[in-house]
Length: 297
Length: 311
Image (cartoon, rainbow over all chains, first blue to last red):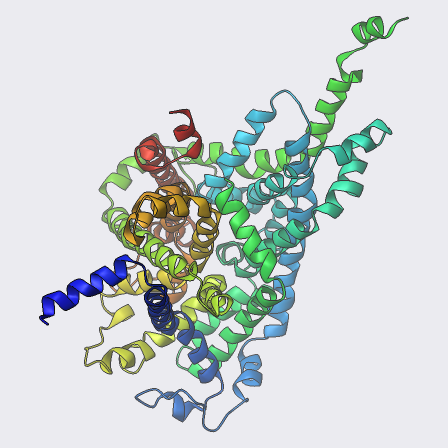
């Protein structure tokens, strides 16, 4: 039997869609997918693991080449040592001063605005919503200089106020996200309350907000992350070292303790771990938020 | 008095409609105030300031279009614009392609899907400053992990952040590392595609390749478009990572001096608020044009289901 016939037979076999063959190609495919996905993991996961590993290494092991993955011996001293250069607990507290109003603005103020856009009818409403969408795409750099001038003129530069007051007005991104969710709540729930003479605010507060808990969780996480990660804002407005947020503190660390890699990786780990912790606690809200804004737009 | 005459004589704000409108504006009042004070006001003010010389101390002095004229002759404006465009041109598409590829792989029925998804997503939530600190370490030319990895394949590791040629690729690499958010968006998009479409394609004899080109890709174009528009707007404003990586210098030899960094330098190191405002407006107009062009050409390649339903 010649090779051509053999291969011809095989094609014939495949054409009949032999279930076992189909099964085999499926396993092959998923095996290939695993190989690619695992290879990809090297790029996406290894940096973080190596950061963690370095944060537990002694200096003489860090400078070894080629790099070693397992800390030997495991040194915890880098973590407390970070505090001698940078009061991370103070930076954490300062960061929370900014996180809190951002979260309030995102959940309470933005949701009130979002509810109005989702439910109430008023002349000029569509034009207003176009403005919300426009700010969503507005590069924030455009407002940077005049906003700074404004805060400088009223003596707010060097205080937390430029970072804590503006978020209290709500933000376009959260308004948009919450409105998308409110639109999916059936109107009938509110109609009954409306007929009973319930005020719009009470409907929002007592009926809609409790229903929106999952999306409020999402918004809270986004707001937390934004405030936690913000760099340019604190850089411009906070001058005093005692006011530093974690972002500024870590940046100062990079600048002045650049070669103390064990300490730097320990400090970085301390800034990243809370974010990852929140991700694991609220994974669903995370993913939902991203998809809600990404798709229904 | 009948109800109708009452409603006729009642002022508008006592009618049901009127009261609803008042509630609406009361509800959105905090946002309106914030919008006027922190968005609209500053936009107008920044246009005004761009025609002045202003250092915050002395009152602004009107100089006409001098700032714009100076910008046109400022080599660092071109350098920073070039660096920014370079990063945008590579980082945005490469990030999107990586995210799309990963999403396609994860959309198959692979085991440990949740684990993979988490692994790929987490870098995208790492704070910019922390990611800069981490990559500064990994990209050390002599003994960094990245070059050690390359060396194990016999490849010579470049100087990365200390090399004029490799500094921008290094930034692009860091940005691609954080593409997990886009991947999640694509994954959700893929899962929204009705299975019946694939079944129908299969009945018509489509293979995997056909299914990808004729079903998956067209239905994903709205999502791809959305991530493209926002990706370009976001990457044009890249600042934090590079500022931390280069101690605010944009080095070596200005090879990572991006536009917003140069704007920052003019505003907050040189206190040239007028010049910085002009720079901000040029960036604003550039992004506006780019976004407009994308929307303009969207109908050529972005597929909307409602359109096909009509035809």
